[in-house]
Length: 189
Length: 189
DNA sequence: AATGTTACTTACTTCTATGTAAGTAAGCGA
DNA sequence: TCGCTTACTTACATAGAAGTAAGTAACATT
Image 1 (cartoon, each protein chain N blue to C red):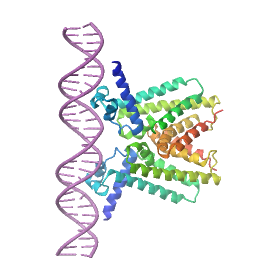
Image 2: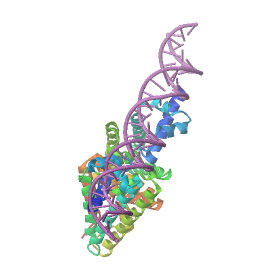
Image 3: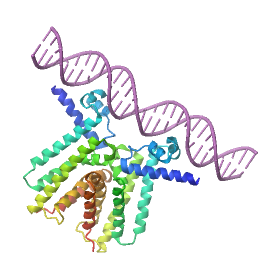
Image 4: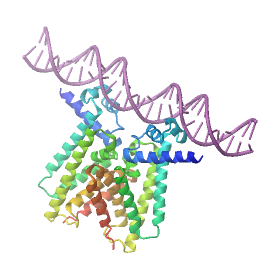
């Protein structure tokens, strides 16, 4: 039972890795089965449909994001954004991955409704949090940019996934310059 | 022969539409065949491999981009960028499409090397042009932003595809606000 | 000890995308 | 008119992904 949970979790973890690296439709159960040295059908035992695994991956990613913002809550708004940027750094470094919402938004018209809803809700959580953090930074005087918090949050929501996608092709110099530009754009004091 | 060229062009046009809407791997020859009321294998007559059609779509898109920038060359740098933003407006309005480099960068680890090279070269053309236009705008005093032309170009390269992807999920209010923010960020005089 | 549950495997079905081989009908060029 | 090319069609081959049905071995529960 303990190892059962282990396998179940490993499947989600591997699934997430494949989704972020090659995309939801490009990954398949055989790749996970091979990596875990079990059979294809064993994955179906835990996640009968690929959609089920997809939903579990989204849920896990969302949980991790929520944990991250909980850890940085009530602190310096800059710390929260730095933690987020660190995530993106890791995505890029570790195999030129994309972020989860980036992949699902790209493949949006090619996934089931349940997956659309789950990823849309997750995106909403991120966008709402971004706006709150930008607002908090502005109100506390920690940030000093000249557009609205909402506008800055919207820009970040587009540029973060975009930089991973363009960066995986243009190279790391490109990616890190965009990350740097994001940091500077806050005009922190 | 005239209608032959017609069919050949219609295939590329339809292929491009499907790629921008649902992605390279989600579209298939049957969809195009049905739309043109011909048989599956007829597409193979013009484009033996799907990769061939993919390359033709990239080439066509690139040609259109090159034509666009040629039309706006030596003019106001703002006009060139406005023309580009108009393209993105149309992508969004017309079925929540993505842009071509956005889709191929997203699916980068899931397409053949030829397609990777072709889309990477196209992306390079765009990034180079963006940098030149930003530089021209700065030097002429038409733009007045406070970062380097290169940095601004890199930001645009990420935010443009990103805004289509996030916008197709977050909705049009989101998308148009980001477009608006891009315009304002140039600080035109 | 009997029963049920968990974690799988084996073996199969189904479906669909991709691609090929071979043929046909129409037109064009010499 | 002969022969070549163009623009297809019909029919087939292949591969791989997704999913299911049935069984087994080990362990837990009562």
